[in-house]
Structure formats: C-alpha cells, structure tokens
Length: 298
Length: 269
Image (cartoon, rainbow over the protein chains, first blue to last red):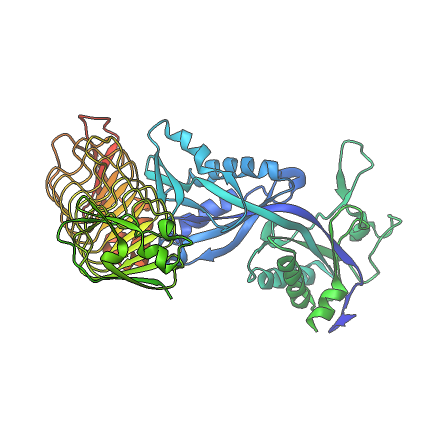
C-alpha cells in the first residue's frame, strides 16, 4: 500500500493499556501558564525512565477556562493506576504550585478519583481554606504571591499508550521535516499527546539488552549505521534516517485517529516507508494495523 | 406535565404545608395528594381544603396563588423541582438536602434554614435569616446553594457552616454573623456588623462596606477563586462587570473575638 511514493508497511503498532488523566493549568497570562505546563511535562517522555508520560494537549482560551484566565490542558499517563496520584502530587506540587499566578483544575468529567489538592493542602500549614462550588471542592493554599487554587480531587481513566509511527527517510533533513509535519497535524487532535521532545523520538528501543541490568536497548533493526552490522536490519539501501512518533491517548480511537493523520502528513517524497514498532504482539494489549487504518479511512 | 397546585382558599392564619414536597408526594395519586395533612393554625386539615390539584406527580411541582401565609413548602426535600409562581411564606426549603426550589416572586423570612444541599433560586427579594440556624442551634446552612437576585434583610447566613449564598441586591445588618464556614457573596451594598463573630468562611462584597474593628486588613490582591465564583454567577444569570471579575480585593481577616480565620473580601478597585 502506498501514499504517493511512500510505502506504508503492512505491520502494526503495539500499544499498551495505561491510565491517563487531564488537568488544566491557568495563570495570569499565557506565558506563565505555559511555563508551568512545560515544567510539569518535563522529564516525562517514557514510563521506562520517567515513571510517567505527559505532554501538552492544547491551549485553552480564557473564555473557556474554569477561572476566565488563559490555560493549558495537560495529559499525564502511567502504567498502573496506583502511581498516577503520586505522579500528579509530585508534579503539580513541584511544578505548578511553584509557578507564579497559577491555578490547577481537574480536566476530566468522569473517571476514578485521585486526591491531589486534598494532599497538597498540607503545605498550607493549617492556613489552607477549603471552598466548595457546584459540588466540587477546591483548596486555597496561601503562597507568597497570593494563593494557589487547586481542585481537591482529580480523575483518571483507562487509556492507551505507545501508539507509534516509524518514519523511514533517505536523509535526516527530509525525515525531520516529515516528522515535524506529522507532529503538527497530530497536535491539532484532542485527547492525545506526543510525549517526546517536539513530539519526536530518535532513540527507539527494543525489549531487552545484552546487558542483564537493562530492560530496553537501542532498536538496532532501525539504526542506519548498523545496517551492515546487525543481522536483523529493517532498512534498505535507500534509508539513512529513521524517526519515531509515540502517541498516548485517552482512548484507542484517539490514538488511531492521530496515527492516521500522522501517516498522511508524513508521506513526503523523500520518505520511503512509514512503519510502526511492535514486539511481536506479545506485550501490548492493542495492535493498531496501519493498513486497516488506511482502509477504514478510504 | 408537572403537578399543579393552585391555592383556592387563602389561609387566614399561617398554613403549615410541609407536604408540598416531592419526597412526601412520591408515588401518590391525585386523591392521595388531596388528602395530605396540612395545619391551618393548630387545626388539622387536608391539602384539598386549600389547593386545587391537577397534573402528573412526577417530582415537578408548580404552586400558584398568594402563598405568603404558606409555611414550610419544600421542607426536607431531597429531589425534584418546586416552582413557586409568586411569593412564598416562611421556612421554605427548611433542611432541604437536594432538588431545586425556584421562587419567581419574593421569599419571606427564614428561607432555607439549616439547609443541607440542593439549590434555591429567588427571583425577587428574601427576608431575614436566609440560610440560617434556628435560634439555639449552633449550625445553620450546611450545604447547597441559595441564589437571590434581589435584596435580603438581616442575619443572612447566620452560623452557616458550608454552602453558598449569593445576594444580587443589598443585604441588611449582620451578614454572616457567627459564620463557621462557607461563602456569602453580596453584589450590592451590605449593612453594618458584617461577619460579626465569624470563625471561618468568606464574605465577598462587590461594593465597599464598613468593617468591624475586630477585623484586620491583610492585603490587596486578586483571588483566583473569586474569579471562578463570579464566572459561575454569570452563568447563573447575575450581571457582573468583567472589571470586577479581574479586579483586586481587600482581604480583611477576622473576627478576632473568635478564631480570626474568617475573611471579608471587599472589591477594592
């Protein structure tokens, strides 16, 4: 199957069951909201080393935010539901509460509850104030620029992580350009994030390593400099650069839609193939077939 | 189609009509509803002696007529909707825990005493002691929301512990007296002795008002939670200038004769 001159490989992305939540950061202006958003989503590219995956979902206009100030919507994902509250507590406490003028609100209407503001309130040392509006409890925690307003309870739901695309190009510049175009198109969609820097990852990994202490190591099958060395290369003579886009979403449908949009946007002249990463189907709960996505869209 | 109750005989003395409540009418036929007990003064009578009843009993009740002498409508209600097509007498919504009472006219004194939850909206004015505790009781309103678009008289939110009271017009003296917690917002002017004896809680005034000497000024700032409350009130139909929503408030802490953990927030720009 081809889109223009790009071959879409008949394979699938192996995605995993995760737990995800959405929260909204607002601030006095867009710059401060973004400062907190960048801080709270920092070092959150992969659960392998960061314990969670997080990213900016979208900007929120002042008239659509809970307090009438500009905001940013964040999605955060973990592999298990027991740790999502801990990650939220750490990140909201250290990256949002610390940022001037911010407030932080739950962004999901339904799901399982996890207490965030109700834990952070103890920073108020007894001076914190509870408010209940429209059956929702918030905490006002005194800080040096006024007070930090945070929802008592956030919610999380079952989600999907590890949706991915591999973009195989003739050179690094063209592959970067295609990946950037795909990221731009995918970021227009709701309910998903691309957790890696600028949405793109170059150090795709395989499961296991020749070193016993490592659970993952470089995906040598897709490393161009190993084409002549490794026995299992997936790259032909024309391919000299590979980039991956990883997608986490609140639903499988959101991840699939993002992959579809990404495939179309990345299919450019110097991109020889678009593929997806999997582990033989034995690890992830979801197999997102690239050809099926395209057939469904046709 | 809601259940219609139309007053055909105006009571000469206060009529205690606790039975006008979705909880007490649940599952009853029109005949059963007609036989519900009301107290005309100290005389036990039937609802049909005063009201003409028609429609479907589906938790939505509309009450029409001169109801200023009808007490306790919606007392202890936990679900459904009662619409009062005019004025209503004292103790409406007493200890209610859910549902909504919409009063299209004015409410008398003791509106929603010791309310636990639910919502009351008054399109006109309300009397004394809105959302208060009964005399001798240490706790008043403990939850829910009361929206009054007009004025209220004295002791609004007396010893309230939780919930929200919003006054679109002016409030009388002793607003939030002995308040334990919760939020009172007054868009118009307030009388004197606001927050006297309050332990915790927030009284927010969008106009300047006199402050008791037992309150001390903490700072002038722009609280985010007020923005959220005022946006909520915009959705509820109140007319609030965006200048106020984004404005600064003086935070007065008190009452120092009590815990000193309460606050009066006065619009300061």
